[in-house]
Length: 160
Image 1 (spheres, rainbow, N blue to C red):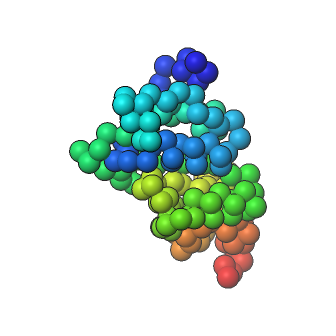
Image 2 (cartoon, rainbow, N blue to C red; image 1 turned 90 degrees about the vertical axis):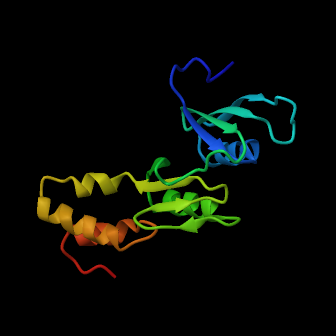
């Protein structure tokens, strides 16, 4: 089966709706697909869904109420620009997601995500440590990352 040749994959424990979540996630990012579904007697809410998310192997185990998802484990996505950042942010909030701080959110299924424009870590970790600190301070005030505001802070301009 495609995607199952990878030795390591991330497994997320869901209480319910694992297949529904996996189908939603693979609709968001290129190079994503459902690789395998193992029903174990419940076709409406299969126990295991193996999928590829932007080339990374993932798995959802729908195992009931024994464990809960927490932000201690999150899916981090590097976005190319503000358009991609905004589109992914809005899609993940749709249907009951919750914004958090610094590019973090929780989707309607309870999975934590970090939506990070690829320029952000570059600016924060720049050789110019003072400029990097300004960019980081600006990020700390944001929910969804605003690339232009981060660039302005990095350059020493006022953040709107």
